[in-house]
Structure formats: structure tokens, C-alpha cells
Image: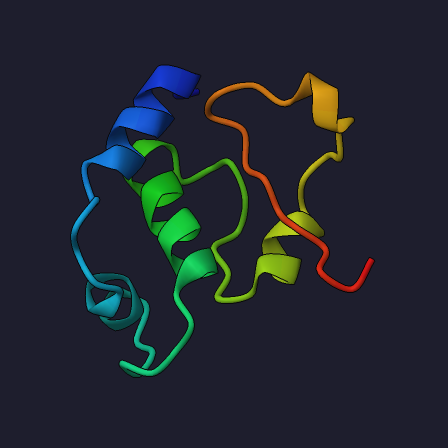
Length: 84
């Protein structure tokens, strides 16, 4: 399993790139929101077994354990529920 530092470093290596790299990798169009595709891309680059890749944040969140906000550490995925 990849370490948190590896996950953060891999994600940071894509700073400045647009989402086309991630949408095209998974066969989605340029106008596709790519936040979940980015998470899946980084995950696939470091450890593809962590969860099933998804184009939807809800698809990723449904596969992962929820922790309390104060337990979050660098390398953890954070998903916001804007609906409350």
C-alpha cells in the first residue's frame, strides 16, 4: 500500500495541468467534471487496489470508510457534502 507521502507527492505532481489528462484516460469528454477522475488517476498510479475507479465522488465515497474530520491526515481523501 502506498504511503500518505507518496499519495500527496503524486497528486502534487499534477499541479498546473488541466483535467483533459484525467478525463481522456478514462474515456470521458473534455467537459466532464474531473475531481473524482483525478482521485482515481492518482490512486491508479500508486495502488490500483485501493478502490474501484469512479467518475463520481459518490462512487468513491461509497467504497471507503468514513472517519471523523479531526482524524483526517495528509494523504486521506476528503469529500465535501455540500447538501448538508
